[in-house]
Image (cartoon, rainbow, N blue to C red; front, side):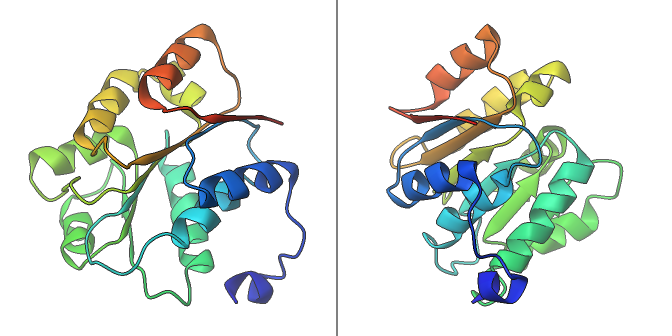
Length: 191
């Protein structure tokens, strides 16, 4: 219904490959540039997999506040009729409002790595119900020095039955090694 209202009718190449893999529960490793429709490629299949629990089930990591904001907006648009709540966590602003979003029953958390770790240490963020972990713009997170924090976050999420969707514009050796560590039998997509 939300897609109809937004006028989305034809999937992009990355969506054509990633959505069926996501719906099938497979881990995905996708090389695709910004602007190719990646957000819908990971948001649509994951939104269809969760029900309102009032605790984080989908976790999306983004390298910057701007990207986190855009992705959170897209989740809200695509999930408009689901009743699911989105929490947006990023640095440079107070922790209070963000902690309130988590306590109010966020089902989806979109965050930058540093701020997410802050919320973990302050016990406002819990990882036990995470079903889907989405790592977006991983090459940028590597360039910005976030990979140690991202590794910590991956380890905080449940490993059993977790689906991991991994998106990066480029796949240098450090990214490939990291992907092999955190993905299980992923479907590779290159756009």
